[in-house]
Length: 236
Image (cartoon, rainbow, N blue to C red; front, side, top):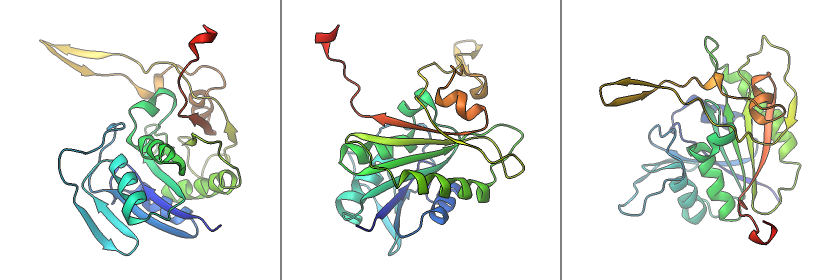
């Protein structure tokens, strides 16, 4: 069966990342993405007010809502025949515990909940390097060629992180690895009663062979994420 892709993100419909993703995906595709930047919104969705959807053309819709709203509306109404949701390419990493606050990942988690296959793709950033979107498109094409040939287990999705490199670097390897469960750096600047987060993303703990370690080492990290996070208490 031919795949029909729904593309979304949390950086907004005009972000460079979703343009690069559109270039990387071959075949039928529909963009259903937020009108604004919503990084870090997590699995937030809208139920208490109407959601305005603007049709830019037959294959592109701008949604005044969250990434999860985009997935819900796309699969329920705008593109109910869609059979693959791809979110990204996020400008910034979504490694390890980032998946809990990431709107990029939330969009594909929602697709998985609704029984549709999904992939989240993010690009780790490291100053002074800027993202080379043409190179990111190239790497995404390689990743999609691999992942679309694999059958996803029920209740699972792929979380992909591209390393902070450009075309001047050696071609990265694609490595399947578990997500890190290490915390982000917790550092705050305190002035009077105001706490301002000062943690540095690239100084986070990188336990060996986890997605953080793989990606910070210059390779593409791919993790299989399951919705089944419960524990059988009979085994405790």
